[in-house]
Length: 239
View 1 (cartoon, rainbow, N blue to C red):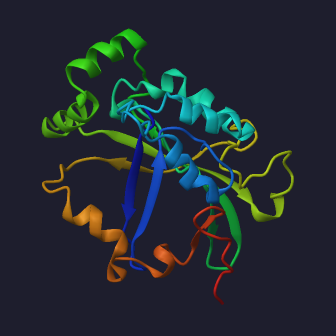
View 2: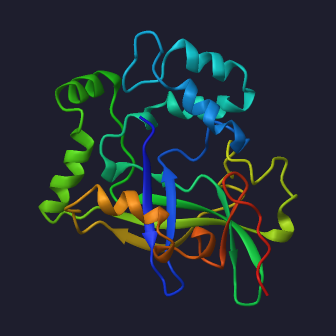
């Protein structure tokens, strides 16, 4: 399972939506290939199979043409794709961002969410039984834990590299198919998140919020945070 998530930060400057996944890397280097990736994981056009899966010839044909996808495949085919609970699943911002302080000094960062309960996965047979009986078992577990007051807790950590050290590594630190080795760039704890409420309506607000200008900052990000490469660009800091 490749699970996405979104956290919204609402400081005085506006709204910053941090979109992430449960794996620290992505399939492609070039964002222009994203539509091709989406098409590759769709069901076969002749029979609309497989459903809720991407393990078919169209995807593997696409993967065979992209050497950089290998890293992501190792994660997708590992036990990280079979989380025991969303409360025991790590989260990653995947992309490289820039933090800019009041003096105009910039640093590259990556976001990490670490579950307080630790990381745990299922084995394949367990997953088939649980998901076969209840496809929503992970969502239900999270929902029921919050209802009972057993609030999920995650540590927010960042990896940080001074802008002057961008080229000190033997890989491109802006490449979403690469991760930053924690032995070279250790994690720093910067905060905690608790999930204490259950949303009562799921359609209107999530679907409209990214498209309403009044609900977002300029460029849909905070003035002091920039996403590097892909959907965003390395935008110069306003003076």
